[in-house]
Image (cartoon, rainbow, N blue to C red):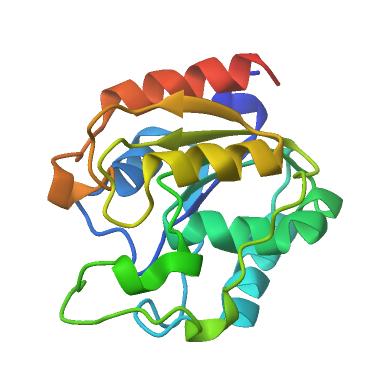
Length: 191
């Protein structure tokens, strides 16, 4: 499958994806991509975030592939059944945020995220109703490598080792993230 055959929904995580983040850059590069915007990036509510993802999928005109990062990954797993019903055929899930162990997260933009914040805990563990791949980092401060592998297994997702890539965001040196774009292109070929 080619990017011109699908609508790509970028689902950022907690605190959003700024102008230098790879999701923003990919959206600018891929003509069929758009970001799912949230009203509040710092104090998220699961119902609001999943509803925004569902609305974006509902507005799509082609089959949908989701590209989620961090808390966006957890959002997609909570909304998975509804998203599948709305035409989502695949999900590229990058650096999942382990909300079940949020007490281990670093402070982000002066904020902390409690385990029970916004209703995201517990992370759904069932098989996702669409093809998926999880990219996990060996030194992600928001999710251990072993936990990312475990989540991928529970979701029935393929797993790809992103190496020592931190949280795969601007802070870890991943602006454009060309390796990720190549992996995404490979994933699309499987759909």
